[in-house]
Image 1 (tube, rainbow, N blue to C red):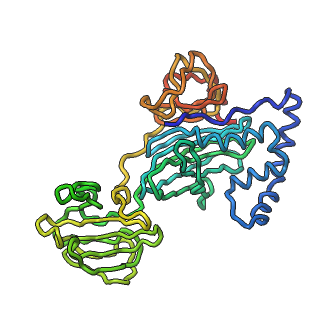
Image 2 (image 1 turned 120 degrees about the vertical axis):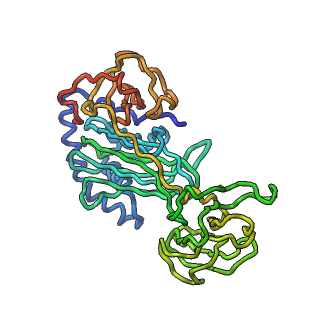
Length: 410
């Protein structure tokens, strides 16, 4: 598991008089950057994320050399390596404040064939809230490749992001507001399959043989899943695609090969009692391709569908994550959210953990009566930031807000 820390808190910009003069000047410069942001794409000819355009606008306006601008840029990078590790589905409410250039990251594990879905409801001052997803591509030295950016829905108060994993890998969802903005958000992360279940009449309960099971006395392993159902049960297209072949073969008997061009893969349906489509046919999700049977080398077994996924360049891959329905609901927030954005103390010495669970790794011990800023809440846990900028989760019952009145994000 990775450590969980945020970008460092803002260093002082000088005494009170200097700061009060600087902030309006900085805000005015940021507002004036919009023209610069648009010129970045025109100059390079390459589309850039909103976060990247904003970062470059800070640099071009000279704000990257200010303490606040420098910390915003640094936080965007460091949070990728210090994201909070959470299990899916995950729900969290959080706050961001004007006087800190902070980013937040959540690290999640995705299987090849799964789709990450994120929805972030925003309540705050006008301005951008940048939400991007990255795939961790390095091992001993982690590197991160941008994979998706959240976009606002038509209502304007919700940002949505979807990402299909093309391999088993860790991913980081990064959230960072514009400088000098305050607000609150509710984040919901969940995972879902990228394909429809191929025998919907029985669903996942029909799967009785999984990827890797021994075949032919251990001479080979199972390159798919077996979905058992009554003979004649309809088998459907798990995605939009083109039927590549319906030619029977010795092992599979009556089969259908369905090309999924969007994912550079082919879906294999075997042991069908009969086929209900033809080679070259264009099909949509839910169209009937055939019916469950036990043809081919399954003649001595109960009727079932052998379902496989073959990826271009890598051969057979485990199809279970592609069709496994999402289970469980994200835990509701069980702690008071009024203190979000405010400073508070911890009642007793406690562990600061990488995620909202007592099973997550402890980053360090937080002494009793230590001051923290409460920046998020998930389940019965608060996400807090220490004086040195390190962030993690503490049990909600040991956090005592200093102020309740006026404790909302400023």
